[in-house]
Structures are given as structure tokens and as C-alpha cells.
Length: 334
Image 1 (cartoon, helix red, strand yellow):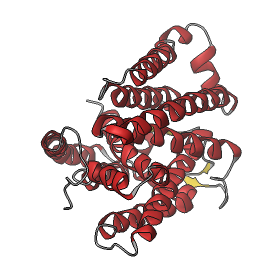
Image 2: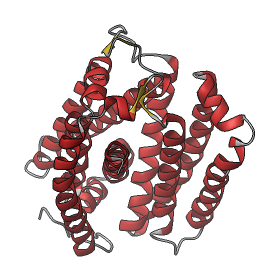
Image 3: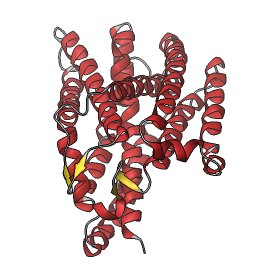
Image 4: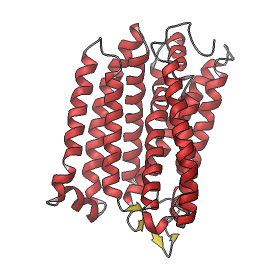
């Protein structure tokens, strides 16, 4: 049994779950200044209030799992990404505090609204910078990070940061399409159309830039016969995009745009996996080189087999209990 590969899939799953689940509530924060009246903002906030903190469980599993299971990858990636990771954590703390405090004050609510927006934006930008840095490759010499302090700040990482912010805004706006009614719903559908066009444009830009970062990426996507194996991914992206815009035009469609935008994220994640494999840190550190000893992997796997289904079950239960539309004056905080 290839334990390192199983763990690579588990950590990839945890990261994907985090990106999808925390993505829409970060997106909500990014859209916050554009949501108009205080009541609309309260409705938007109440739509994620029961689930937002549970969404961040997956970040702990992804980061903690990486530390335990791929210690070498963790020890190389962290020094390369200190600045964006710390900025992300501060952003998440800030918006968490804003979330709780904005319902406790009338006079100072606008300050917490601003905090919620800035915290969400900083967290999303930081995640995009970290992703861009990983994709462009991290310099390694003798099992240690060999780059500089500012390697995470490049034109490519800035592009991925903007792409992730716009993508999260798409998730946030389609979530509001699913969870709200009336004027807020129509406004969310309009924002979803704009951010959907932006997301697809930026996916295209990042995808076209990637092959020039590493000859290996170029061979994966454009050399024959590999081309035949990977072609379904861009074709599926085009189909999902078609479904997204078609459903946004239909005013009776509620949950389909949200699931279509989730589909775009899943497909992009699969595309990244195709680029990365068999490395965990491009261009040189493989999954097997970075893995902890097999005894550790099997011991930790026992815990994961128990815990991951439990986390999935309570997450699914929370979403099921709080399903349906959120109306003004109703909500978890009142």
C-alpha cells in the first residue's frame, strides 16, 4: 500500500474542501462593501453564520497534516511562504472577530464591516500568493529552502492572487443567489455574472502562463499523447462555465449556479494536480521524498480514517439543518 500517495490525496482533499467551503464565505466578505443596505448585509452574514467557523476546520487538517505527514515539504514551504501565511492567518483572525462583534454594536458596526471586508480580502490574496509561489517552483538546495525573502512576490503570484479573489467573489455571489430572495438575490446574480466572466478570463491567463514556468508543465498539457489524457479538464471547464451562465440567466435557478462555480474550482484543482504530480513541491521535491516514515504514516492514517468521516458528517448535518433561504430579520445571531 502506497501510504505516501494515500496521504497526498487526503491532504489534497482537505485543501480542496477548505478552498470550496471557506471560499464562499471569504467571497461574501470580499463582496461586502457592494451589498448595499445594512439589512442586506445582515442577511448575507446570517446566511453563513452557522457554518463559517466549521469551514475552517479543513485548513487545520491540511496544514497540520502536512506538518505531520510530509515534514520535509512543510520545512521547505513554510520559510518560502512565511509572509503570505502569516498575513492569511491575521486576515482570518480579523474577520472572525468582526463576524462576532458587528452584531454586538450599532454605532461601530461600519468599522466591523470594514474589518470583515479587509480580513477576507487579505486572506484571499495571501492564499493566491502562496498558490502562485508553489506553482512557479520553490528553490531547494540540500533538502532546505534556498530562495530569498521576497520570492513569493512575482508577477505570476500576483496574477494567481487576483484570480483567487475574483474566484472567491464568484463563490460568494452564487452562494447568495442560493440563499437569498428579492433585490439582494438579483444583485447577487448580477455580481455572479461579472465575477464569472472575470474568473474564466483569469483561469485562462494563469493556464496560458503556466507552461512557460516549467518545461514539465508544457509537456503535460501540450505534448502528444499526454494531450489526450488531460483534454477532458479544459473541455469540462467550458461545459461547467456554459451551465453557470445559462443558470444565472434563469431567475428560478437557485442552487445550480453555486454548484457550477464549485465545479470550476474542482476542475482547476485537478488541473493543478496534473501539473504537480509526482512532486509535492515543484520542481524537485516528490511526494515520496517528503513523506514521513511508513510507521508514522500508518499510525496517523488510523486517526484520519476515524476523524475525516466525522468532520464530513457534522459539516453535512450543519448545512442540512440550515438549508433554505435566509430572510431579513431571521438569523442565527438574533
